[in-house]
Amino acid sequence: MLPTPPSSLPLLPALGRASIAAVGNLGAVFLFFLDGLLSGLSSTRQLQRTVLQVYFIGVKSVFVVTLIGLFTGMVLGLQGYYALAKVGSEGLLGSAVALSLIRELGPVLTAIMLTGRAGSSMTAEIGVMRISDQIDALEVMDIPPMAYLVGPRIWASLISFPLLTAMFDVIGILGGYLTGVKLLGINAGVYFHRINASVELSDVMGGFYKSLLFAVLVSTICCFQGYYTHLRRDGAGPESVGNATTSAVVLSCVCILVFDYVATSFLL
Amino acid sequence: MTTHEPALPISPLSDSPEQPAGWSIALESLRLGYGSTVVIESLTAHIPAGRITCILGGSGCGKSTLLKHILGLARPMAGRILLDGKDATQMSRREFRQLRRRMGVLFQDGALLGSLTLAQNVALPLVEHSRLPKARIAEIVHEKLTLVGLEDFKDYHPGQLSGGMRKRAGLARALATDPPVVLCDEHTSGLDPINAASMDALLKAMHRRFNATVVAVSHDLESVRTLADHVILLHEGRALYQGDVPGLQACEDPYVQTFLARRPINL
Ligand SMILES: Nc1ncnc2c1ncn2[C@@H]1O[C@H](COP(=O)(O)OP(=O)(O)OP(=O)(O)O)[C@@H](O)[C@H]1O
Ligand SMILES: [Mg+2]
Image (tube, rainbow over all chains, first blue to last red; front, side, top):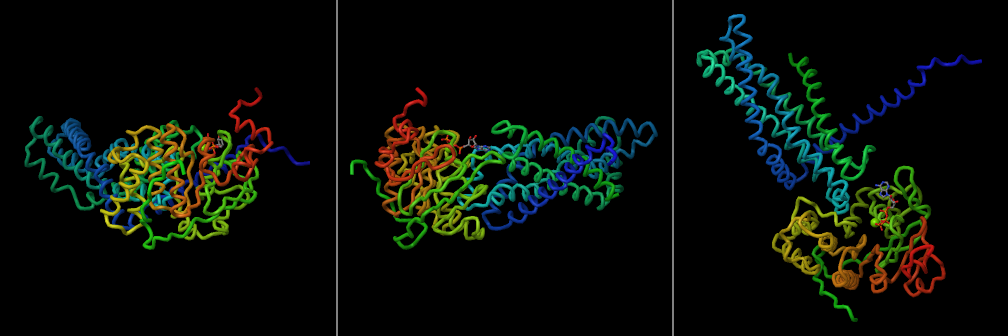
């Protein structure tokens, strides 16, 4: 006579299945990324499509990134001044602003902004194409949809994210200058000298690698969610596109923050 | 001939005026469906080469599903699809794509790319797969759009057109490369009688000019009568009737009679 299993055991197979499915999904996403990346390079027409996407993802985001960068820098100037003044070292404001922007806030906030502005539209656009048979039509015309739709978006993200991050950093430092120097009266020379003295190439490179990582994450997640809209179980038709867009944005933001932590702990 | 047939230009994708004629499509005990739901139970049918075959059947009986499987966009649950006598599922990916590239497809709701204008949509298969100069492509696009009566709308985006116009534009794209096999999902639905008749005439002309195999899904009995050399009527997951149009009209099956008489069932 076999002993009856404890009541918690029936959960075990379900947990196992869920874990296997999760690992399987990760693998699928990775292959999707590789496929998009490689197919993005196949011809000169692909180059044209990538340039067009750089316009949509990058150029059209310049204004919003500038705006967010400016205010982030300004608030960093205020908060930094307040905190540093407590220990009597307002002079370090330049270092504080520049390092936190370059190492952390620049890449993360730019990626989150781009998720909202460009990532969501990638998912929605590809998702609509999926549910209205346009992706099938591409396939039937023997135009690989991965190359047509996904490759250019991944490459364009890889180009746009670091550039916009750099812009965010520079504008943010100017924002810190506005509040720290112009408003609160720190010496301008001290502010910039501190930046010059404390920021090293490794800080800049760290931010650069992070922005590349986020470009991969955001473009892959957003394209993947759109591309497989029709396989969703939580809705069909337009509803599934809406749900896919929501998941893409939420998942991208979560991944940005989680991978930011992981990347920071490796880069430090 | 009572219907006016448009004159078709020479094929843009081949240098010789003689294009290889269309091939046959054979369906052997096909079972099709989505996930675990079976839509078509067991379908055995033959679509002859160089003929116009109409596929009839009630709404939701699986006609679009069948086309999707013929195009290799989904895998059959069981059975085989033979293109030109060769099993499509056994072919190498490359070989299958070579074949499929030469099929023109009209999807049920056009499936035009929303980000491109009509002219760019029609030009797309030519731009991708032919080495024709730009001017020649523009010429072909103009010809095709004229054939479906949309030459004045070439710079419109699909979102700015009516459903019937999208359908006509979809047909123009399907015919852009003068393919030897044409598959149309309801080429006349949503069209007025005059436009519907010209779509029929266009398919007929296409078929004559290139000896193309045309598969047209249709509910439009008028269109079936003028077009079809061969009819397949689907009902409850199988082919209820296969043969020519007079045979269909003579068929004694009660469903076929109800279908042809356009009577509601059980009244
Ligand atoms: N993506 C899908 N997932 C699940 N079921 C589907 C899907 N597409 C179609 N079906 C089901 O398959 C059946 C056949 O659909 P299909 O679109 O092939 O019909 P149809 O014969 O083309 O109809 P109509 O003449 O109205 O276009 C329907 O019952 C439909 O609910
Ligand atoms: Mg249909």
